[in-house]
Length: 106
Image (cartoon, rainbow, N blue to C red; front, side, top):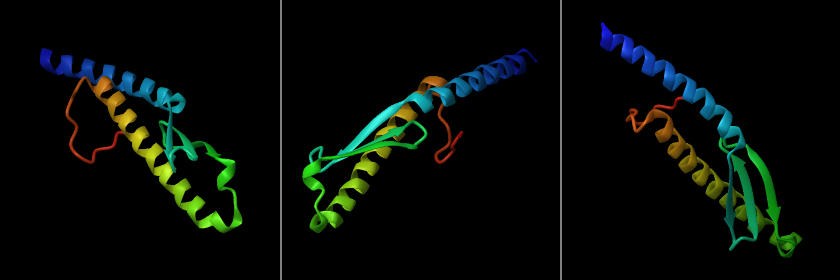
């Protein structure tokens, strides 16, 4: 019975830490880039776009397709960085508790 109570207490602690993590992810900011830094995209920890920076040298009508590709590449870079940051924060919250692959808590 004591083990069950201990598990319940741990579950409540993890739930509280998860709620704090959710709040922290809104303020976490990562930047992805492509084209040697000519295109930059900022995302928060919830994978919401927060900004795009395009070097003026790329803003030419004949270069539109390349610019579009660079924006997508910068977004993907930022997303990968945000996912890594979220994973690291999850490890902190769960104390290294191994979660089943594919399990998303939010």
